[in-house]
Length: 106
Image (cartoon, rainbow, N blue to C red):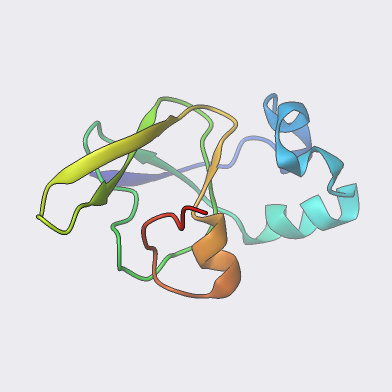
């Protein structure tokens, strides 16, 4: 289950921000993100998004732990990493305006 929560602080005030790639974003640009964002809570086990589905935006983790998995061609889900507070999910798909997909390993 997903519920909308009140936004309680700006991106510039995020306690995790100074440890993320977002730390160098100018305050006026963070203010744009503040106007566009919403805050949501998820029950344990709820999928944030699924491989192949359209991405609804950037997801900044502020609490809890998210498992990131891909579906192998055999149909088995394989966990590839964990996301913690301060991590951002969905950025690649959001920025290229494409469905989410497995990471491209180089």
